Length: 305
Ligand SMILES: *[C@@H]1O[C@H](CO)[C@@H](O)[C@H](O)[C@H]1NC(C)=O
Ligand SMILES: *[C@@H]1O[C@H](CO)[C@@H](O)[C@H](O)[C@H]1NC(C)=O
Ligand SMILES: [Ca+2]
Image (cartoon, rainbow, N blue to C red; front, side, top):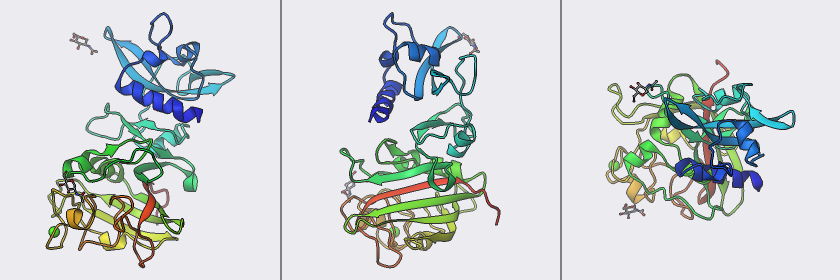
């Protein structure tokens, strides 16, 4: 798929350099017009360079197709501008309603710090920021056997399987009431379904009022796969190197195959365990285990009930 190829090219570009979008004379693109002149005509995100205080600063912009030519979505004069969106809902409100990896600025203490995220702008009206994705059909699978610090920071690739990180999940779910949407796919039955929680919150790592880091609160379930998170409600986050579960031994190491989770004793559901094991499970009624796919995503609640 052409679009996918373009996004992959972009990700390489972000971490390496801009040679892929450079003009033949070596000049760096400054706006969507330059991007188009350089032969890139796909709608999507591009890195451009603006001269700020005599240095070229790389920033990412979104080029859309309007009147037969690419131009900036958010400004008519072709000047690149940062989107100030703190989540995928705000991106959607700004008209950036594509599911492709997007840049958000979710950290209130570091408003200039960008984060590349995956959005779902279609399910139930869209506006969802994806916080976890697993899919065993990818060629290169991400290892989810990780330390507490890695689960805090996030890991993986937004184009494949990834965990966005507990710091971001806390930041996304803290300021307002947020909802959670979970989808799973079962390896053997091929069955898929969803769980929708109108309330989902992950507390801070160090909250003096709470005994455990990243304590998770969840409620108001409806869906087709059962309430697999209920047992984990009110639990802190545990990993192979930080045991906050109530079991004598260590759930992440002994039961979860190295995946970090809001284990209790240890619990029926874990969406970070290795593929191909019965621990990668959504398990409300002994029904869904050995999953092949899972996704979790959050958005600010639109309803006050
Ligand atoms: C520009 O660079 C100078 C010297 O490095 C620095 O003192 C100044 O604060 C910079 N201005 C901005 C707006 O970044
Ligand atoms: C997880 O990784 C650690 C080392 O990083 C290793 O010792 C351990 O065996 C792994 N656990 C599983 C279940 O694979
Ligand atoms: Ca324990």
